[in-house]
Image 1: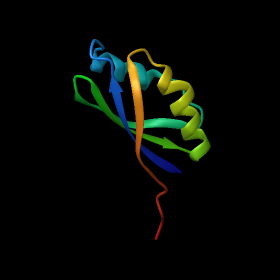
Image 2: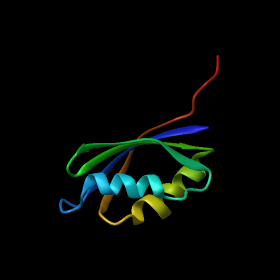
Image 3: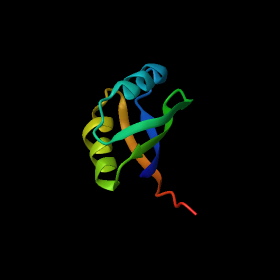
Length: 84
């Protein structure tokens, strides 16, 4: 399991709340959104939980980046939780 934290920038004309709905409806292989929040009119932050780094890369490049209105998707952090 890997947790990827994303900062997503939108075209200013895009409705951020509608984009969040679109992101949550995406069919992602081996990945799912744990949380997606509107930060500002043109910014969204999200937590993407994936099986591995390859699944995260595929979700970001092939699915999230193609959503209408998304200009840029930055990975803030990629974390693999450790059980103690």
